[in-house]
Image 1 (cartoon, one colour):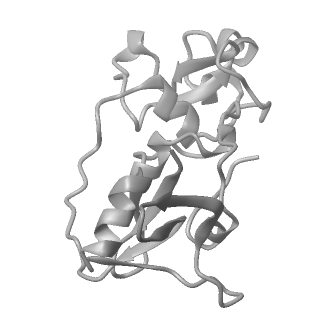
Image 2: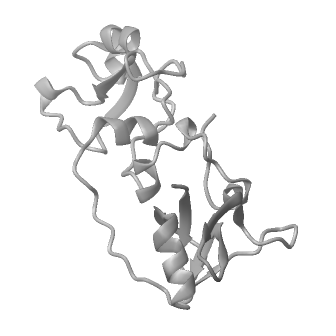
Length: 177
């Protein structure tokens, strides 16, 4: 199964959906397969659904015809989403991390009333987390690379680990290397 990038009518990314759902939306005339910058349809090469009467190429990027209004509320806190939000890099030293070396650091430590929330937690390597200890970054003489922000729906997909990246997504998504 290949995933398909679903765009709102205004071309903003909404989510990834299954290839079956994408083909269904296109066949029901609720979405269209995008045409990329070279004038070709945004489809997965050599991937198709076959029936006795037809072959349907699996799209890589589709756009809804009608705009979907979505109220975004921050999801419950999850470490994997935090690491995706921070691009799997320590927010103090910039080191690229893997699952076994990444830790959650509370900018305002829990002992000082800091909550486990999107706005108070960042990805940190073990050594920076130990060095900062039970202090704020200012007290520890450390600087955050980026201020913590609430994640978007795209942070729920770890795009850096994906072998199934489609080049047509470049204009809509930021890919972590």
